[in-house]
Amino acid sequence: MARGAVAKAEVLKKIQNSFEGAFLYNDGKELRIPMMEDGEQVQIKVALTCAKDNVEPGQDNAIPGADINKKIEFENTSVEKKVVKPTEEEVKNVNDLLQALGL
Image 1 (tube, rainbow, N blue to C red):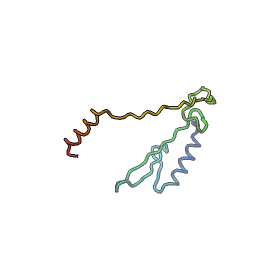
Image 2 (image 1 turned 120 degrees about the vertical axis):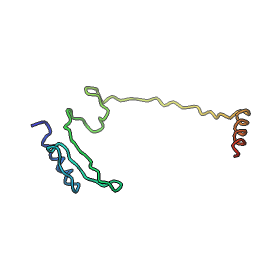
Image 3 (image 1 turned 135 degrees about the horizontal axis):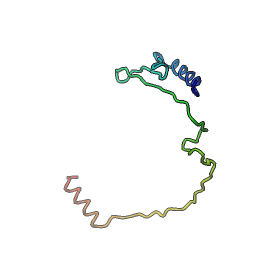
Image 4 (image 1 turned 180 degrees about the horizontal axis):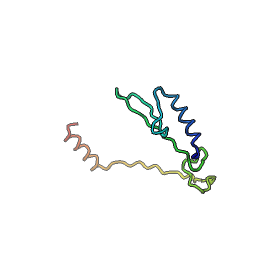
């Protein structure tokens, strides 16, 4: 028997019992869940796969074999705020545009 086959069957059964009308298809390899969407019946297809390697929660971007306990430190630097005022030519161009648009 394939790795995780018993666990997959148990999970599929729990999901199937959660949705009225859900049924196993393709020799039990997928679960079909009938739903109504915009007045039309659709089927959500669920197929499970047993993971090759187990991971811990929070390791969603971990690289296999990498040390995930590295601490990264950041230096706090301030950003200078500078107010930029438009030139007279830019103000004139915007006013001309607004007048041309009738605004």
